Length: 175
Image (cartoon, rainbow, N blue to C red):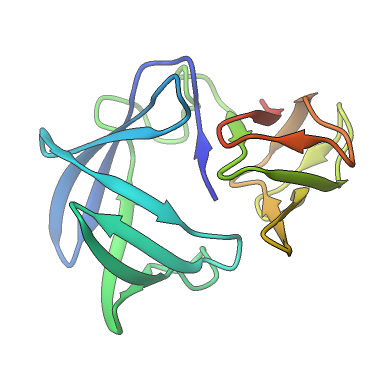
């Protein structure tokens, strides 16, 4: 699943892995891909992590099997090895602040792959919590449900059931 905040400056996160903190900057590219810098170094990233949290991740040409578990815990398993990972507050922001420094969540769900919308599980104006299913996308004969990554209110829905989408197409906006 790819959740981005397209059209804004890069997301900047402090990610602590086994006690070492890395500054990770993620920017959505106009063509729908991502540009990722770790401690200022460009990293070539391609990944397919469905809502289950288990999938493949290609980093600088090396493939890894990744299991994020339930997405709530702090353990990430990479090629069978467990790592303690914490995403700390964005550098320079106060805790609990939203993308523009205000309270509340902000999320733009984009299609991570081409497919067909099998179901829209929410309505504009609906309050959602983290984990609430938003869209079911059918791709490669599989149905993938994409959940909210945080709480908020559905502000925009850009697709309808049966509609074909391309990778990078905007599906839902939560504010």
